[in-house]
Length: 241
Image (tube, rainbow, N blue to C red; front, side, top):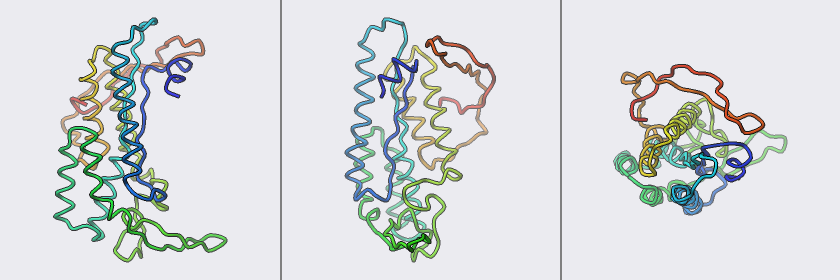
């Protein structure tokens, strides 16, 4: 699919999403395994692309939007709020996750949440058959007894976009901005990608007081893969992101 995007759709940048926490995953080790593959694929692609001599002059990039990290932040904060994990333990883990500087370290740190993640509660869904289902307390429930549902996901599968969509869109915009500067080195791209994920795929506050105005040129390709400029305008962005 990545090569199809480059070769047939005219893309210059492909954004891969890590797999988020969801109800049907038995344990976090499963997510660590698949998300590690996603991160390593992106890193290997960047290395190979730097060594490849492009015939058409295009610089192809693959970057990662860490949805897994975002859902970890949401689940951890919710678990602290409903008493599944102590505030001291939760605050320590939040700090360690925020300070991690590579994906392996981050993924390994999240395994300490596995015991919390696997706690389930039985929920009655109002369906034609009156189905009873077991759901993960850490992201479904808004209180210890699960008398109230959380705002982040109603079923443990789909994340409520009214609550989560803003950061997802901001992360995507930030990552695409990283790719605008074609002369960025691999290391500079990694740093830009990491900053975007740390800022938006987390619960870190977004301060707009220090925002700066930047020029954004929107481009796309036509059916013959020829690049065409659609619009040029000004946009507000955080410095260094």
